[in-house]
Image (cartoon, rainbow, N blue to C red; front, top):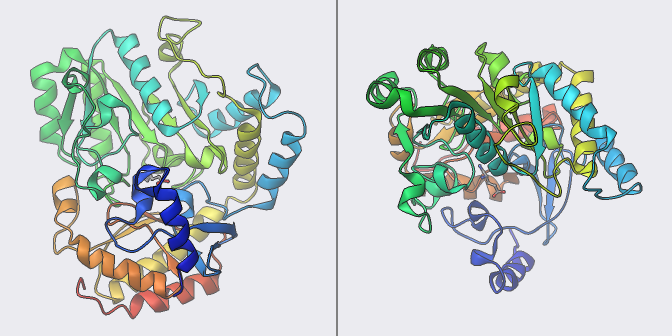
Length: 423
Ligand code: HOZ
């Protein structure tokens, strides 16, 4: 595969951006080689600066559930651009998007539009603290909730990829109130509540973890979180930045039948534009300014262009609910091909990870047992055969509605022939 142009661009980028990238996992550090510079994308395909074409299973890390540059979304964006890029004031689209979100996430009785998943989570945690008048929060090892200070403890995604459990630059005091529990381990949660239950403002969890690779919740785990938080008066926050509108149109909460107090959304809800949401029970959201004393604001919050993309994406998903059955069918085919190649797979709907380990992956420690060099070999093999997947063991593979049967069949054939050492 020729990557001359990407290499040249990467050298230039490295003079400006740390590691040549604007988000660490993109740097290909854990898989080797040069990051590809993408020139354009359409449907299931991306094309790099050297003219290489790939079937894309990164899908911008989740937003592109309908594939790249879906015509309804790009049309909506173009039309909105002509009427103004940003107003910093109220507009009708915000109400339409809020209505659509609440229709599918009825637990989000009130909500706020923000710009990124990090911002949504940071604001949700602040609202939970303001509502409960408590300071401590519980997060799970290996879950990633963006890069706000208090949540950069034993995180997944780029922290796991780069083997950096805790970020430097975060003063100790900022994480003193962050308590750590083990994913899928009820006892670790019970003991935190037994020690400090009346000081815990919230439990934040990815209802299906997807930032240490995909790790589904064990049977009853989310129900358990629901009941223990209720018992102690703590707020249960589902971080559905990845799972929202992906596991089904109602996200993980509908998929697993567990209703949180608060939810954060990102990725799909913005249709590929920078937009995220936090919301939840009315009485909690009424603590947010200007109604209450929890402050949160943003010049570009509710940006009309991003809002129009989000509306178009959700309307498309509403029009074609069969998409989710199709995603399930196609993802199951890929899972079967991975198994045929002797790989260990975790899958939840259209989120999958092939883990290069002999252990069942159920939490941070078992995820970390994966052989990342073996994953790198698998990644390079796929890339050289025209398949673009996450350049990290600790991320998900995303299947989209734009992946045709022939894309999936070609992908399965290539995966099933993988002969690397991690099998
Ligand atoms: N945090 C994202 C994956 N979970 C990576 C975002 C990116 O590099 O674009």
